[in-house]
Image (cartoon, rainbow, N blue to C red; front, side, top):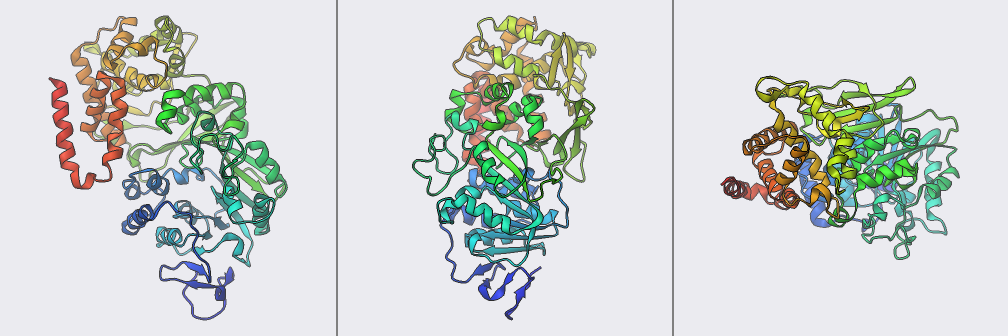
Length: 590
């Protein structure tokens, strides 16, 4: 797009070249600009730079980049989930795009693959160079290193993306209201029918009421208290505040809600669908995917809290973050052409799928689509299928059981919730020898809805190529339920039993299901094979985690932290770690 040139001329009709110099990486640097101090740390940025420089696949869904995630900063810059924030938007591909604060280029890469031309501004030279490396094989991107307010652009843009940047306006704009100043400057750079795409954390996000440290400053309750310590540097806003600010410059606002938040979203929901209450079950599953900190794990269930917020129609005000399409045109068409979009990408890349929730008469329909192309629908014993289905806006059996799992009368409560109906449904597919069809391997309680005593299975994506023993399927469903139930405190009801095995045995006795030791061994074999084929996890690690869970559920969470601590040196000590874990597994079997 822009080529190196020694002449003083307008470069690509975007900015005056005499005000900039192009360094050896291809980044256009404002003359006299000293790089911002904002950084993830020199060591972290060096690591990100090396990973991107050595990668052949630089696309948003790059497995090569994803495999180098070792901590939170690397996950933020390398995860395929970053681009999921914007993949459901429907803007014209010929749009001219400006990105403010492009960081290390995760969003820039997505924009460059979607739109005709992209100008990305970043104040940190190190990060700008990494962003340039991320798009090095594309010729429609210009990376500028300069403060946004100091860049004079001669063109108007169709779209301006401001992802996690507006909150820092006080650090760069002077005056009484730097945030309005920033929005005014953005509005001036937009075409008459252009739009701002803004992503920002919610000052009043539910996770902050749960005790999560404020994302930008690291102190709990700082945002809830109005930023008494850091208000001069960074500040987010509640929904009402943000709406008032945006309406000064943009007559049309389209509110979208990313969950768990905009950084690594698994689903995006529009305002109407969110406030209808029909999305509560889906959102509650997504917010429980990621445990933000040990403190939150011990104090609150984000799933159960989200259900109550949705039930009382206040989830839109307490969502963890916002995605707003602010249009200059009062009658702007919807940029998000569905009610919600859900991504299932925490698995092998060839099985990545999305689900669009769309209107279907007076109700909704869930339509799945493959993200990975070319897509492979089977892998040995495991088959993956995608098909449209009706939308269920009630609560799953998993959710209903979770809410009563700590009661003293949990046995009766589970039967009321529909556990017996699930057993009857599964036994309806019985084969010889106490086995059931492998098509039921995904009929776990989070995919089951019981209404009027009848059982309905939705979103059953997976088919096991062999029959599964009924007791083994019951153990699998119980395990996936108990993984979450054991995070709730205080302990009680079913979770008062100390070992995972005793908890599953207790569930079995409610339904007169006798579970043998061999059934548990068969479950471990099935689950380790399933996880390896579907998710890409190593069999021996899954076996280790499962045996930890059966001993004590709390051991599972310790075992799951092992890869996080070992991932950085794993290239050097992989064999030693494998041998160590296998010795432990051998001891557990005795």
